[in-house]
Length: 342
Image 1: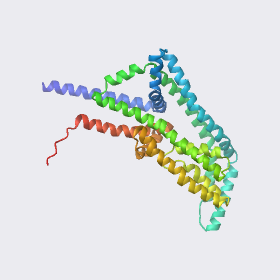
Image 2: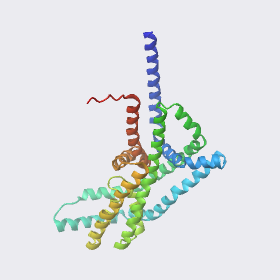
Image 3: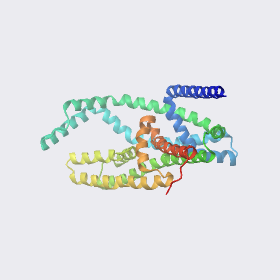
Image 4: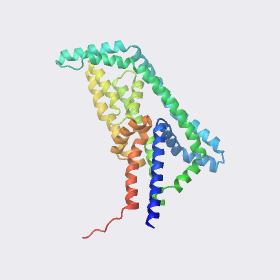
């Protein structure tokens, strides 16, 4: 009997090791496709209810319903990206074409500040490195654009099969779930809530900061306020520093030009109003949608961007929340609480 038990245990361990080995090999080889897979899962979770409505109640064919939702989601994603690209592309192209003039201007500005305040800001070597970095920025942008297009293609390729075979995939996941039914339901609910909270909440927070910033830019007299609106929206989705990446350069530009009143007004408005909007929205909207703690969002976004790129804005916080949830499920399923003695 002991030999039989030992043999079965060895077979079990061997099978687990084999599964893990093949999984690690596949993950390593297909890691570049992970952003596309995560993006497809995000859209599937967000649009699953609409897909079920079209197929179950309106009796649409699965392929037609999937195609319609994919087309609408692509338009919803590309339209704001197109607007932002239109606002930013001209400035980026100008900066790249006139990188030498920009470096010269920075050198003059640094020299004036150093002479006025008798401090050393930057060296000629660092300014030269900045010029080289600006010159090499265009190939990086082209490479990023190609990667984005390929990721988008595979994202929608995966999303189509998730829609068409979604019910079967969900049934398989439920059948093979190692957890109790109530914990499996809790896990499914938590993932859905977190995806919605981050996929909807983070862009809403960033756009809200951009709109508030746009009003302030008009009042203060910032040149080309719509350009800085786009910069604020993009920066607002980044962790920790966020929209400060937009208004801190404006403060520096005003002060460098001797427009101290506008520079001070921009500092007060940026840190006092735009930054406050970010804090209020994160503590109200995100907590209301998915009870997302701000620290979970901050550290999750930092880790997610490093692991998955832009889609990590959504799945980084989800990973942290998922880790905490799995700990709760483990305690619920395997840890027996001992009664306390008074």
